Length: 494
Image (cartoon, rainbow, N blue to C red; front, side, top):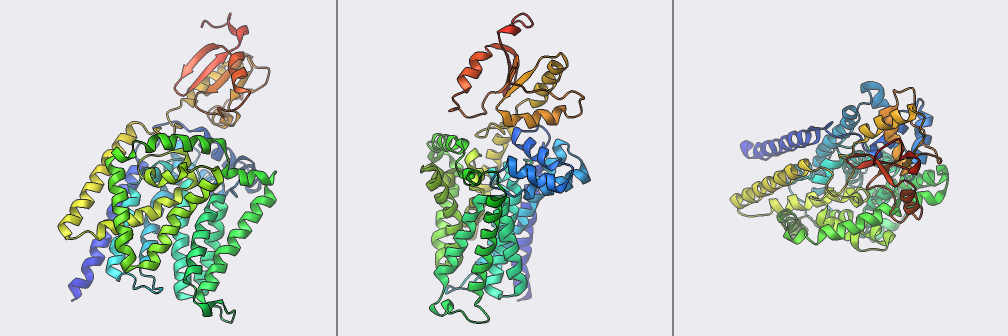
């Protein structure tokens, strides 16, 4: 009897340890192989500010819809470890690996929740939780965004932590858990406005579980009423702070309306056409469907929350963009990194849980082990392909900003003014040129244009005129080029 009780715990520990080891290796692997991206440089520029107040102000300007939590964390990280590319990305890796562990504790708590359904026994919930951590550790978007000095790995760590305390608050009704859930609910929304969808999903889940007597306000309040308040009130406070501190309140709503989200939706449609031919997409979706069907019979309350958590953020984004393309994020969210995923990145966690439940519910054990081996083998094959071309579907990596910055410095020293398109890319040039006494000057009357080939708004009416004004190719780097106006014809050969 004692041996039987210890066996599941030992197996879960082995699987979780494997998930942490694989996840850490895949996230640290060749971390500094590629130069800083323009998006990462924005985070660096805000985090490198001399004071905390300035860090927050720059974050609010550069990243509307966020309250600068990652910038603050990166600020202290830079103070401790420096601001090299590897150092700044290492913070994201640490958060990404921490998220793997937090997923384990959150899933274990969730699958044991009793609310009109039996829930899973402890040994089953631990094994499914460990499998969820392993599957999440192999998710390509989770790997990709855990290797960028951006806010997204912070979100992927905050979400399971918030879910864990939220479930404990609803189940145990302790003040410490309610305060913890409320604090993390605030931080989750503060890290990105789009995470309101996660709190809304949890609120809907609680409302559907309310009994009629729970609606009577009495003291002490029921655990579900208190949990609902711990969700909605801090989230509303975070949104109010975003609106109050934004230079233009419409910028906060614009977090879900940027042109690159619509462009990302188009690329999603193009990639989704090939998804039925991709073995990993078919296998992952099949496992998630099987997990939903089988899990509904054993842990209905947990599966209901997982489905809301998985689909509601995607549905809200689809309504915001006026397009059904974001619905395809579920199909592609494991194996095809894409710009659009960063706005519904949290759906990867419930997808991982459903796939893990699907693997666990396969009988007999030999077939279950075969399915897990097949999944891991195909996942590692896909990941190896990703490392050969990490910019696939995203296009940010492999841009030679260091070389462009060196060219800009030499031109600035020669007295030739420069203009940059798009303007937000200037921070990455500042990063690579910041130790120089001459910072590249970006002026409207410039003779040279540093042009990021695949960046900027393609619908910008000024873009054709800008390209026409600089017809000469002066230098070409990967992902970025330097163009000159006709006055430069004598200084450079075409």
